[in-house]
Image (cartoon, rainbow over all chains, first blue to last red; front, side, top):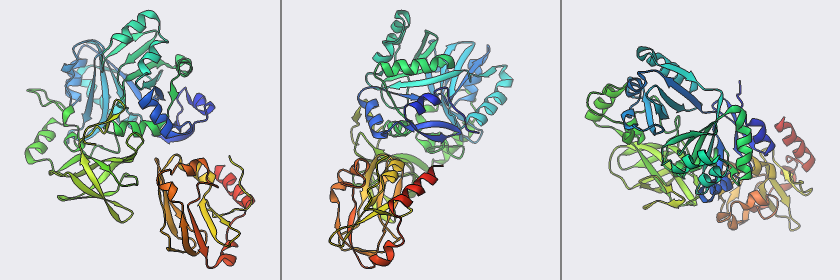
Length: 361
Length: 132
């Protein structure tokens, strides 16, 4: 059955082209995906991300539980509101999902996971939570709107009460605050500054319409995908899944092998690291015309790999991609596009940050 | 959607063909097709001098979303390509039946092959039925 967010009718009234995404009927674009992309890079755009799952974790041992559940270490979260990106792994070190966890207080952490992985994530979290006596509550009563772009923060702030506005202005990157019934986090999936706002379902349409009034452009999943890839951010299911470890997905920076912390998947990760990781995720830029796509073969000096996420980058005006290739130093490769081998450069990503091409891209 | 010009013939795969006064045939993709594809970012054109066969892929249009083959409505030799599309592929989004043409062919079997193509009414009916 296709699920609808509370904003579904609003999207349709705006003329959105709708698509199925992980069982949800979501806006792909409201006309031009590229214009929506540029709106986020240059001004402010917003996304309905209510299909994502908010899970609240309550209990005295929640921190202990999350030290066990996540490959990143929640001990980095010392101040209320602070957020952390992490992978949740199975015993083999495969990625069950990637997520953001917010520290509210010692008895309460909030986790936001992907829509397409909803069922297996909840089953896994609930199963693991039992030993820690942590209560797992899915917050289907909450919606989520991401407001992103260089002017996004100011535009949201203009809609807040003075007290909440003051808090929202103050918070640093990867920190959340609460006020006006909203949970306002300075996080995102675009490589731009902005907020992700968790809002009670019955206030979501009103907030969306007020944001339009403040000059924020609605943007669909199409623009969200090109923005996140330019920003060098992984997409679960495309760039990694249970068959892939964080080492192979460019996510080593999210894994903490600290002394004595026994997180799920750790033994497998240590074993793989000791034996040498055979595959690596790299960034590709194609200077020739054309578009890099998921599944295309990548030919390197160390053997063949394949493109995971590939797209046309509206900011750079050329194709970019993530590829998984055999480990080994390379700065060039070729991609098989309809039988023709086209040269690409292997680059460090992100490709774009704060509206501009990154160095070397 | 845009009005479909009456002098066009269509393939079921959404290419259009227009027989010009000099007997050549101009080829493009329909306004409906560009709408399905979304923002176009790349067009792989045939080369002038290529022999194209009706029903075979002879060009590629790529949007941010997907790559799509363009099939030749008629057999013949390519005598001209719209090289302006190399820098401005979005022209197809803006004017699929005009400035967004893709190539011109000198047909070799036009009388027979044009029988296979749909007139504007039949094409309009086809896309109507696809939408429901």
